[in-house]
Image (tube, rainbow, N blue to C red; front, side, top):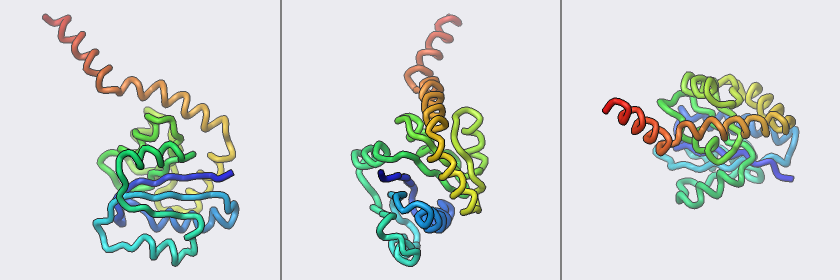
Length: 178
Protein backbone atom coordinates (compact mmCIF):
# COMPACT_ATOMS: atom_id res chain seq x y z
CA UNK A 1 0.00 0.00 0.00
CA UNK A 2 1.54 3.26 -1.14
CA UNK A 3 0.95 6.33 0.97
CA UNK A 4 0.91 9.23 -1.46
CA UNK A 5 1.45 12.85 -0.48
CA UNK A 6 0.94 15.54 -3.12
CA UNK A 7 2.57 18.99 -3.11
CA UNK A 8 1.79 21.51 -5.83
CA UNK A 9 3.57 24.88 -5.84
CA UNK A 10 5.89 26.92 -7.97
CA UNK A 11 9.48 26.38 -6.90
CA UNK A 12 10.86 29.02 -4.55
CA UNK A 13 12.29 29.34 -1.03
CA UNK A 14 8.96 30.56 0.38
CA UNK A 15 7.23 27.34 -0.70
CA UNK A 16 9.34 25.36 1.79
CA UNK A 17 10.50 22.52 -0.48
CA UNK A 18 13.67 22.01 1.59
CA UNK A 19 11.66 21.37 4.77
CA UNK A 20 9.39 18.95 2.90
CA UNK A 21 12.37 16.95 1.57
CA UNK A 22 14.02 16.94 4.99
CA UNK A 23 10.77 15.62 6.46
CA UNK A 24 10.40 12.99 3.72
CA UNK A 25 13.91 11.70 4.45
CA UNK A 26 12.87 11.07 8.08
CA UNK A 27 9.44 9.75 7.12
CA UNK A 28 10.82 7.16 4.69
CA UNK A 29 13.22 5.91 7.36
CA UNK A 30 10.13 5.18 9.50
CA UNK A 31 7.91 3.90 6.70
CA UNK A 32 9.35 3.41 3.19
CA UNK A 33 5.85 3.11 1.69
CA UNK A 34 5.43 6.89 1.73
CA UNK A 35 5.74 8.62 -1.63
CA UNK A 36 5.77 12.30 -2.49
CA UNK A 37 4.84 13.84 -5.82
CA UNK A 38 5.66 17.49 -6.40
CA UNK A 39 4.62 19.65 -9.33
CA UNK A 40 5.07 23.30 -10.15
CA UNK A 41 6.90 25.62 -12.45
CA UNK A 42 10.42 26.61 -11.48
CA UNK A 43 11.04 30.36 -11.69
CA UNK A 44 13.99 30.17 -9.27
CA UNK A 45 17.55 28.92 -9.32
CA UNK A 46 16.60 26.00 -7.04
CA UNK A 47 17.38 22.62 -8.58
CA UNK A 48 14.74 20.42 -7.00
CA UNK A 49 15.90 17.22 -8.70
CA UNK A 50 19.40 17.82 -7.33
CA UNK A 51 17.94 18.32 -3.85
CA UNK A 52 16.00 15.06 -4.21
CA UNK A 53 19.24 13.29 -5.16
CA UNK A 54 21.20 14.88 -2.31
CA UNK A 55 18.59 13.66 0.19
CA UNK A 56 18.75 10.21 -1.48
CA UNK A 57 15.00 10.30 -2.15
CA UNK A 58 14.81 9.40 -5.86
CA UNK A 59 12.92 6.18 -5.12
CA UNK A 60 10.20 7.88 -3.06
CA UNK A 61 10.02 11.46 -4.34
CA UNK A 62 9.18 12.63 -7.85
CA UNK A 63 9.15 16.16 -9.27
CA UNK A 64 7.31 16.58 -12.57
CA UNK A 65 7.64 20.34 -13.09
CA UNK A 66 4.71 22.07 -14.72
CA UNK A 67 1.86 19.72 -15.61
CA UNK A 68 -1.34 20.14 -17.60
CA UNK A 69 -4.60 20.81 -15.77
CA UNK A 70 -5.73 17.31 -16.68
CA UNK A 71 -2.63 15.74 -15.10
CA UNK A 72 -2.85 18.08 -12.11
CA UNK A 73 -6.37 16.81 -11.50
CA UNK A 74 -5.20 13.21 -11.84
CA UNK A 75 -2.41 13.75 -9.33
CA UNK A 76 -4.74 15.40 -6.83
CA UNK A 77 -7.06 12.42 -7.13
CA UNK A 78 -4.25 9.91 -6.59
CA UNK A 79 -3.12 11.60 -3.39
CA UNK A 80 -4.08 10.54 0.10
CA UNK A 81 -2.99 13.87 1.55
CA UNK A 82 -2.27 17.26 0.01
CA UNK A 83 0.56 19.19 1.59
CA UNK A 84 0.62 23.03 1.70
CA UNK A 85 3.84 23.92 3.56
CA UNK A 86 4.42 27.53 2.43
CA UNK A 87 6.17 30.10 4.59
CA UNK A 88 3.84 32.81 3.32
CA UNK A 89 0.86 33.04 0.97
CA UNK A 90 -1.73 35.64 0.11
CA UNK A 91 -4.20 32.80 -0.46
CA UNK A 92 -3.98 29.05 -0.69
CA UNK A 93 -5.60 27.72 -3.83
CA UNK A 94 -4.15 24.19 -3.42
CA UNK A 95 -5.85 23.92 -0.02
CA UNK A 96 -9.23 24.81 -1.50
CA UNK A 97 -8.69 22.61 -4.56
CA UNK A 98 -7.86 19.66 -2.31
CA UNK A 99 -10.89 20.24 -0.11
CA UNK A 100 -13.11 20.54 -3.17
CA UNK A 101 -12.12 17.06 -4.34
CA UNK A 102 -12.36 15.50 -0.88
CA UNK A 103 -8.71 15.31 0.12
CA UNK A 104 -7.26 15.73 3.57
CA UNK A 105 -4.91 18.71 3.87
CA UNK A 106 -1.83 19.33 5.99
CA UNK A 107 -0.70 22.97 5.97
CA UNK A 108 1.92 25.16 7.62
CA UNK A 109 0.73 27.38 10.45
CA UNK A 110 0.93 30.66 8.51
CA UNK A 111 -1.88 33.20 8.88
CA UNK A 112 -3.60 32.27 5.59
CA UNK A 113 -3.80 28.62 6.61
CA UNK A 114 -4.86 29.49 10.17
CA UNK A 115 -7.74 31.52 8.72
CA UNK A 116 -8.74 28.58 6.52
CA UNK A 117 -8.54 26.24 9.53
CA UNK A 118 -11.20 28.39 11.20
CA UNK A 119 -13.55 27.40 8.36
CA UNK A 120 -12.28 23.98 7.29
CA UNK A 121 -10.74 21.05 9.09
CA UNK A 122 -7.10 20.97 8.10
CA UNK A 123 -4.07 19.80 10.07
CA UNK A 124 -1.54 22.53 10.81
CA UNK A 125 2.16 22.07 11.52
CA UNK A 126 4.84 24.48 12.73
CA UNK A 127 6.13 26.03 9.51
CA UNK A 128 9.85 25.62 10.28
CA UNK A 129 9.73 22.26 12.00
CA UNK A 130 10.42 19.08 10.03
CA UNK A 131 9.86 17.05 13.20
CA UNK A 132 6.42 18.59 13.73
CA UNK A 133 5.47 18.03 10.08
CA UNK A 134 6.63 14.42 10.43
CA UNK A 135 4.49 14.01 13.56
CA UNK A 136 1.40 15.53 11.88
CA UNK A 137 1.79 13.32 8.78
CA UNK A 138 2.11 10.16 10.87
CA UNK A 139 -0.72 11.13 13.23
CA UNK A 140 -2.98 11.90 10.27
CA UNK A 141 -2.19 8.69 8.36
CA UNK A 142 -2.71 6.63 11.49
CA UNK A 143 -6.13 8.12 12.18
CA UNK A 144 -8.52 7.06 9.40
CA UNK A 145 -11.48 8.41 11.40
CA UNK A 146 -9.89 11.86 11.51
CA UNK A 147 -9.36 11.80 7.75
CA UNK A 148 -12.93 10.66 7.08
CA UNK A 149 -14.41 13.21 9.50
CA UNK A 150 -12.35 16.02 7.98
CA UNK A 151 -13.36 15.13 4.44
CA UNK A 152 -17.05 14.76 5.37
CA UNK A 153 -17.10 18.09 7.19
CA UNK A 154 -15.12 19.96 4.53
CA UNK A 155 -17.25 18.63 1.68
CA UNK A 156 -20.33 20.18 3.31
CA UNK A 157 -18.68 23.51 4.09
CA UNK A 158 -16.99 24.02 0.70
CA UNK A 159 -20.39 24.04 -1.03
CA UNK A 160 -21.17 27.31 0.73
CA UNK A 161 -18.26 28.89 -1.16
CA UNK A 162 -19.34 27.75 -4.62
CA UNK A 163 -19.55 30.82 -6.89
CA UNK A 164 -22.91 29.78 -8.32
CA UNK A 165 -24.39 29.41 -4.82
CA UNK A 166 -22.94 32.76 -3.77
CA UNK A 167 -24.31 34.44 -6.91
CA UNK A 168 -27.78 32.97 -6.23
CA UNK A 169 -27.70 34.32 -2.67
CA UNK A 170 -26.76 37.79 -3.91
CA UNK A 171 -29.42 37.62 -6.59
CA UNK A 172 -32.12 36.80 -4.02
CA UNK A 173 -30.90 39.52 -1.65
CA UNK A 174 -30.91 42.12 -4.43
CA UNK A 175 -34.34 40.95 -5.56
CA UNK A 176 -35.66 41.64 -2.03
CA UNK A 177 -34.41 45.23 -2.34
CA UNK A 178 -36.25 45.95 -5.59
